[in-house]
Image (cartoon, rainbow, N blue to C red; front, side, top):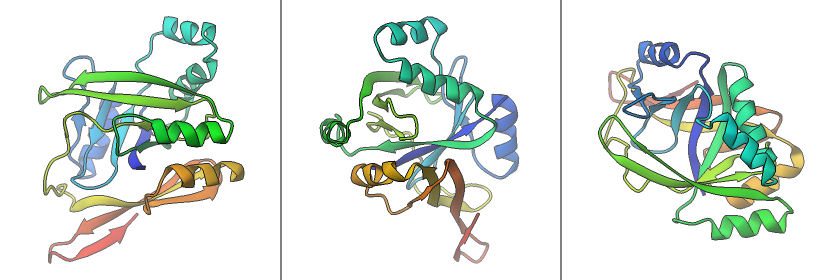
Length: 214
C-alpha cells in the first residue's frame, strides 16, 4: 500500500477552503451538492482532504453499534471532535479488494469493517471506491483507489508546490510494525506519538529547481 491522503480537520469547510487557496493551493470541493469535504490534489503521491466531519448520519452510528462495530462510529466521532489541523491518515492499495490487508490485520488480531463509498465531484465524475476501517483507531484507515482518476496531470500549484514528499505520522509503538507490513511507501515516516505531525512538500522555484519545505 501507499499513502492515499492526509486528513485536515476543518471547523468551517468554506473558511479552510479559502485558507488553503490563499496559501497558493488549488482547492476543489469533493461533491457538486452539499459538500462535506474539499480536496487538494497533486499529480503524484498523496493528496490532502479538508474534512468537516464524516458524512454519516446519527442513525448509522446507532446501527454500527448494534452490529458490534461501535469502534467505527467512535472513529467518526473523533473526526468530528478533533481540533482543527492535520490529524489523520489513509492508506491506499494497488487492488480493487483488501485480501492481503485483511490477512495482515487478522494475523495481528485486529478486526475491521469494510464498506463502499461514492460521490459525484464538481467535474461530474462518478467516483467509487471501497473503505476498510480498522477497529483500532490508532491505525490508519484504508481505501481502494477511485474507479476514475481525479488527479490532474503534470500539475503544479500556483505556489509552486508539486507534491507531498514526506508525512510524519505518530501512533503506538506496537502498531508501527503492522503499518509497515501494510504500507511500503517511503514518504511515510512513523514515530511513537499521536497523529500527523508534519508534511514536507516539493516546491518548484522560479528557476525551475526543486526544493523541499515544510
